[in-house]
Length: 181
Image 1 (cartoon, rainbow, N blue to C red):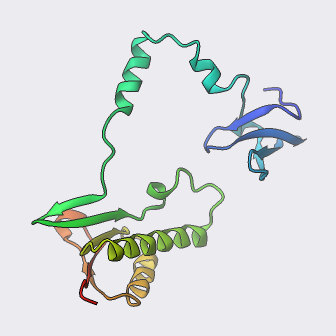
Image 2: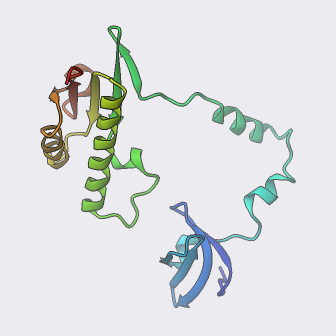
């Protein structure tokens, strides 16, 4: 693919679009709409000739393949709340791939910080909305996230324990939030 400075490009494995600013052999520098500049290999980029919204003006509405795709998008979004014996339980999956589209460019510290901040945000939401149970799905792994969650939970008026093994396996912590504080 022939890329030149000023071409509009999109990254194949990430949701990044921008303009080519510099080319060094196989390395291509791309500046996105926010002004951030990234470096990608030439094979990771796709030249964008026409914006997607321009293409959609000319698409065939009666195309069966297009109809199938639009019908799939109308499915209900899965809620993170579960009714369990007449009480509301909030489930939060802290796996990195569930929190962000791509972990490209993130190291382990960034991912752990994102997971802890998400857990803290959801815990404070449950406290403010008076939701008494929160299930944090952290996975088994090396136990780093579980240890950090325990450290976080010790700073709140909660009781925590391993969640149901039948339902979640060994990779989840159930948090009971005391409401009369």
